[in-house]
Length: 93
Image (tube, rainbow, N blue to C red; front, side, top):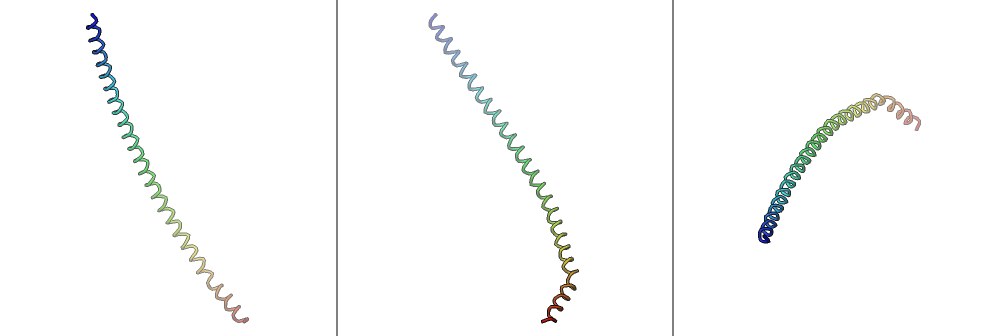
């Protein structure tokens, strides 16, 4: 009887080890799947942000170019006044 109890204990011990081993493998699979999904989501978010920033930079540089042209045209429009002012000051010297 005692031998049967000992063999039952050994059998239960092996069953527990098997269950724990399978549980650890399942947990590793779940962890790996979650990690893979998180990496994929992060990569998508990074690509979306890069795309958004690219669009924003294009808009910014177009606006900057427009402001540069406006500034240049404003300076050119005031060039005759500047020339007159310089000529008047030079004539007083």
